[in-house]
Length: 312
Image (cartoon, rainbow, N blue to C red; front, top):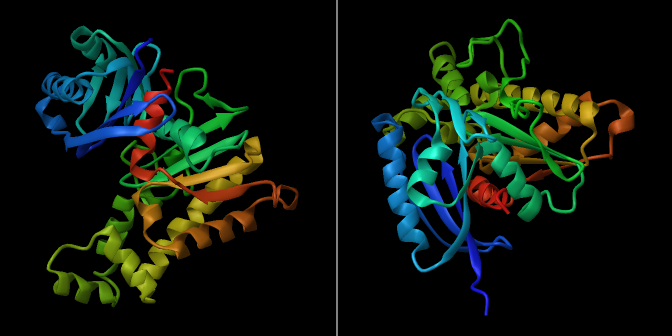
């Protein structure tokens, strides 16, 4: 009797690394999470990651390991060209892991991995052409074209967060002006709120005192739900720019499904409703009713599951 094979998926985030043992049909057998501590350097992080993978997979036959990483990634060679959070540059992650694990290793951008996860096992199932956007600390995305993950000529497709929505806007971490990310990411929503309460009256000031912690994104959305004017302007600006970007993508490659994931999309249904409303406003009439906008089903497990199944 042939021994059953399993997959290992890894989602490397700015604060946490999630590692999962999965069946080939997407079932999560078990998972562990640990602090990233990327400031310690790639070698130390890889050693800790290898130790965790070995502990998780002990006693199982592993077909391969898929790793989702933020930033610019060369999937063909398993190289992280740039991860801004820790200033990792030209890290040969695939080679480093393979040297210790001797398994098939796939390294991919985490948003691309999440796209593949949602398409196969989440909200994008049954679609043919799908756009995925994750709105979290930053904003990323991925494209499914004719049921395949579209990565472009240089494996760089899907940088939705760095689409310019205001050429006179604030400077983004990428160096450009007015990227979607500087308006709609969790970090940017928080930053806009902190700046706004210096100039305008807002219940956020009182909330900050009551909760005895700095303003964060969840607090801004809570104020938005309570009708705070400052929070409403910030959240609706974010939703407007997201909707405009989605409308442009809809007219560019005509997806039948758009999946929105990331921590910001867990906050309130009103944010989703505003995005849908703006998208509908900005697409040409002939594109209306050709697509459906859905909330992620996998959320924090999307990249982990997707990365693992990109090695199948």
